[in-house]
Image (cartoon, rainbow, N blue to C red):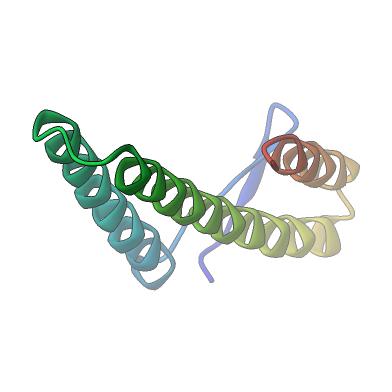
Amino acid sequence: MAGSEVIDGRVILHRTDDERKPLVQRLNRIEGQVRGLRAMIEEDRHCLDEIQQIHAARAALREVALLIIDQHVTHGLQVAASGGDEAAVADIIRVLRAGMRGQD
């Protein structure tokens, strides 16, 4: 894991290529799902098919959010443990709360 730091009370992640790659790959797949949804709408596909595509894209976005939260918590805890920075802990809690607000 690359180093991270607290700036203005926020944990700033410095992701490695290995940490960044799965996020970018998932986002590329989501882009494809959204393009597919647009094509379905342009072709007047059945509404159920369109809704299923929307649910698939939302689930994929939720997985990206979970990966981001996982990385943030992991990096934030390392920052907090190395320097005892209370701001890192507060930022982790803010990110977790934001992630929970995004739940269905």
